[in-house]
Length: 134
Image (cartoon, rainbow, N blue to C red; front, side):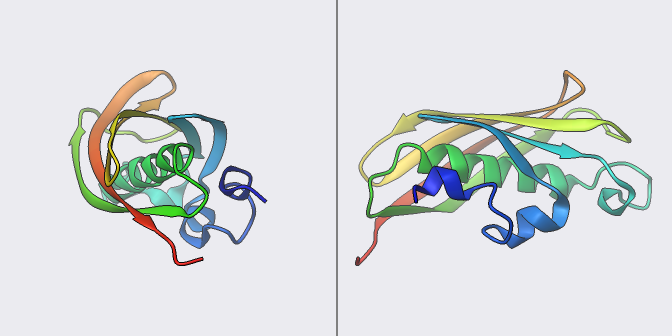
């Protein structure tokens, strides 16, 4: 089974399952995931916690990177920088991620998070590529 087909498999990504993250598109160098805003994702001010948006970007970046990796390669986050533009209280969040540069050991991606079509956050991330032993 390919890495890409595992992403929406229940139990494959326990944290994604916990927050309700679902992948809607996976193409070479691109991923799209969505999340319905529910009460358990809100902070005390009744807006989506920034960590939820960060988690969407981080997970979306990992998925986009996986679409470009070889059979015996995996990746891990080195760094993500995120800007928050607008508070979100309800609706559906969509995270569109694209690979903007990939070398042999490093991949850099860009994520844009939208709430019902309006941009709420943007992130830039760098991941390390590793060969597995099998």
